[in-house]
Length: 617
Image 1 (cartoon, rainbow, N blue to C red):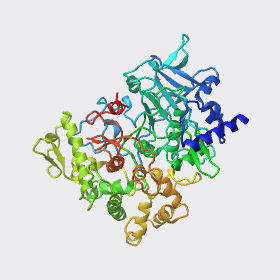
Image 2 (cartoon, rainbow, N blue to C red; image 1 turned 90 degrees about the vertical axis):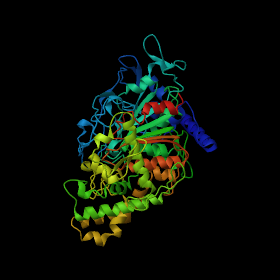
Image 3 (cartoon, rainbow, N blue to C red; image 1 turned 135 degrees about the horizontal axis):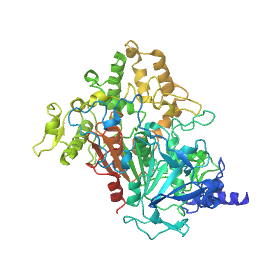
Image 4 (cartoon, one colour; image 1 turned 90 degrees about the horizontal axis):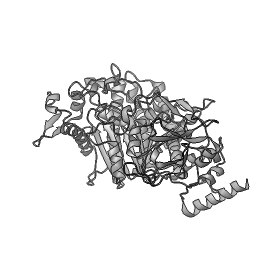
């Protein structure tokens, strides 16, 4: 006990004097955790865990990499079934994923399944689909355990980075060997989450394409909307997914005596809801607003001070964020989705067979509200020009979106993957060829009808926070709350237009009243709003709602598909604009005909190439 008290005092003094400290030895911090449900001095100090026989390095069958994982009392790895990868759908999966395209078939210009075109780092899994193999049980990320599979991570390391004795046992880190020009000290750390659909993430099997590149690969768990404990209490309410992911990064940085890799080069990657978590992970580095949450989950080196504030001994920021089709800005995502589809209700752009009069009018009101919201952000492009909307389909932001779509088509055409002149023979109302031979998409509705995307709508009105609470509604509220409304912006529309909407076919007074109360006027509305704000990367980087980025990621890469029926790709664009406004290095592209997922092909570069570039290999 005396040793634990002294260790804790040392930690507090270091935090007070220096703000944050970097230390290779996790033992002092592990021993000081006072709310652990596990023996943190063993399970969070990885060298102690190896000595105690609960962790070990497990060689792959071909000897090319080792997995750092949990082992049983006999030193054998503990196997468990790999959870199916979340595809990230809300409401209803309407797309036919078998051919890599949404259900609309993309009747003209459909180049079919993208498998084999270079998945940008997700190997053959196509990031967001498939899964279901066997993995080992991971190592602990934090100390207050409620959901074991979501609070562990697996670490995959090229064998060259480890010293191995004659018996095959790992004896330490080899700092001299190189793999593809990297060493154990310079190798980037790719940090995957699988929070698609805003659901919980569990450790995944290895992607050997990363190992071959010389990267260290970490697949991290995280509790989210579907996580409950043995008493059916929700344990993953916002912002828990990012809190768990931050805990894993802290644990890595605290154990560099065991884990190879450059912990200043951690690169987050995620798809759909996981893309959202990657975005907020990138935006929220070292923000003190997360420290209380980190303390409560038992993260290493996070302490509560005498004045009630919190300190962290380790930084939780990351170097770079890869976001595939991020379902981000969740409070306003319905406004962006409505703006995207607003003029397509009579062209097949409905959810289900048709929309009621209430659905149609609410969509119009949401779309109009998006114009006001977008303009309130104060976005500017790289040249300092304002990105705004003067109407639903007019303004510099609209033109920027059209330019992004055009760039995706031109990239595919330049690669010889598509000939727009033959693929879209009846596209006079939305596609023009410039004098230099490049192509220009001139109209959003025409593009969506002409490519077939109009037939693949995935969301109701509203869709992310629907009236029946069938989507991300279990991500917010208190632990004993099953589902709640969270979109303050939609609730305000319902309140402001209540009289007009109440006389329309499809209006449900009980649902609408409940929506307004939970998200806007009720006792818990302010707390729910703060939960949503803590997961809004764009607004944090823009300094909105009283939150301000401290150490956001230096590099951002966002990829969304022009065939994504799940979420407005304008949302992913605003994230990179916000990062660019902070002076960060951004790499944004749409990928032509890519559905919701990460099967980005190679026409706009690949994730692996980008990692090598930003790590100056």
